[in-house]
Length: 517
Image (tube, rainbow, N blue to C red; front, side, top):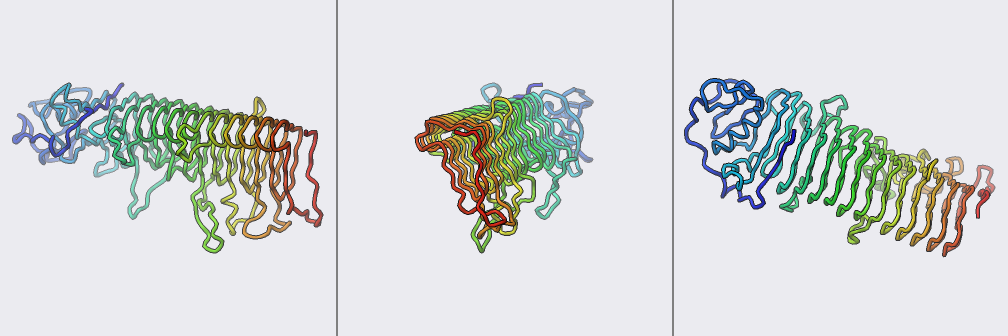
């Protein structure tokens, strides 16, 4: 199936373009007295029903077809009708058919009506399940299902003035509450193309090419999103979201997760390059895993934030208030040459603000305007109500390890209150230092020895030709350097400071420097 969502470049305003509906019903048509069939629409107060058994309500008798949704769309255009609510309603069922809503009047003057068919919806008076449907129109297409699955396959949405396709699978509990249930129906989009949407540039939040809201699982597989005004793919709400085998190229933002994205999100085999802002932007309280991802030649490569901020009125500190697991894990990925738009603040290759643990393995972040990798995870532990040291930052790799070279600032910069382990990292030719760690040992006041101190371990690493220090570590906990070399750095090989650390006995411990140069 290939579904085209087309639109004339210069569509006339609605108030100037709406044709007058027919004053009389077509032969054989009468207002519906019972519940509508699927699909159906209302124009001029009259309900028009379509089923696979009868796809032409204007002709007496039954006119069977295999594509009742397309039949309803064609009926709107051919009879110069406009649905009163701009909606073609789809009731319970599974529809496997090619669906085309073509608003190009150069092809057919009657297509002007189709520019204002904005919604395909499965939101009936009763819960609807199992709807599989796609479509488009004047501002793209809203596909709504109150309590059932939405599945799109082999869809093309292009050249829409604003949004490409908006998928909304959401059960409203009332009173501002909603259900979040991984066992729900969910949304699936596969093998589809979403290009060149948002041409109106009218600053609507939903100019994204593919915009998804779900109270259950979301799967996006095999999607290409290019040349869109805002995000290529925007997931505002979902559980255990998976985006894989997809390309987001030359959009405002490449791939965006934001607001109510919970559970464990996975991004795998995704390329998000040459976007105006971030290639990947994740700002949600859930966990994130990325494998085989490239986000290069953007303003910023990947900007990840798993905190929901709160503030302490006494100490004026920010900290994470969400109770969800905010771990971030990145494997075998590339974040290179970001910083195309210097006016943006998203200029790091990989930027992470994490509530939980951070793991980065076999990843390269080189040639970026600012830092290759910039990692923060102290905000949660800064809360005066949480004094435990439970988080960990790990850079590791059994193969080629991690690389951060040729960046404008530091290769890797870490600001944390965590146990930190840096293994198998090469950081060279950076405009700042190779590795810069600031590991706080305080919350609100002085940390007592019995509370424990975060450690820093740097092993099997190489730092050379950096403009400042090869390795800079500020911490009040113990430092271990093992099998690590630092040479030809303008600011020296190693600079460390751990003045405040006292062992439980009251004696200052020695940091360990093993086979390092």
